[in-house]
Image (cartoon, rainbow, N blue to C red):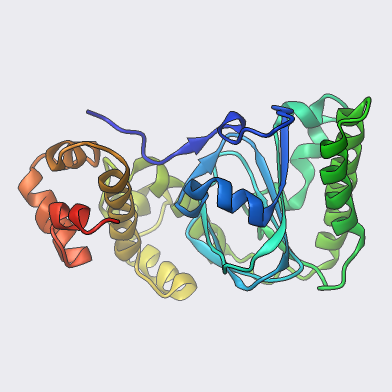
Length: 287
């Protein structure tokens, strides 16, 4: 039995009392309480904005981990894999929107021009903790959605446009020293890994796709992430194995097959090597 490599969540995964269906806004602390699945690595078929007002943590997007702190504004595009480590007191706003929602009023070319939606650039803007302009717009969208006044979708779309435009202005003024060739290669490796890790588990395969030697890819990953490409491949396989063992009724043999292992016994040895426990023992220890 084949299983999707990771959850790809749609907007209707997140029911809201007003159910706009083309956008969703919620306070961060409420969102993570209602939808615990967001703590695990996953992707979306929509755009995501996350504005943090309180709390210190981390946010991993396509293998790269960024500091999460007050004033952080994160941008995630459809298909990117992300997960976060949030403190219990984290606060802020999370906003989802479909491309169609934006395009009802604004040009497609503008949506693709925003630098923070380009995988070659850093997907976070660190604003001053006392920043008020963009935060006020998130609050206005939240209030507008709660009120459901006439033409509220048009108003929300206008506020969204202003958020993106103001963020683009601030982003252009920030130094993007982190956007190096090596960082871009790591992000491209992350995209390939999330797509092919079930079938391909060798550094040679991914290095070839990136037109690099295996040693060069390992060196880049070690320099940027302090891990080798091989370690990242094994981590990705183990994360998916844990997800399937935790959230499905599949047998160990079925999980092994879903992850591209021809031999369930080899999969069990592989899992034990990188986790310290057998698959069944791991499953029995779950709460």
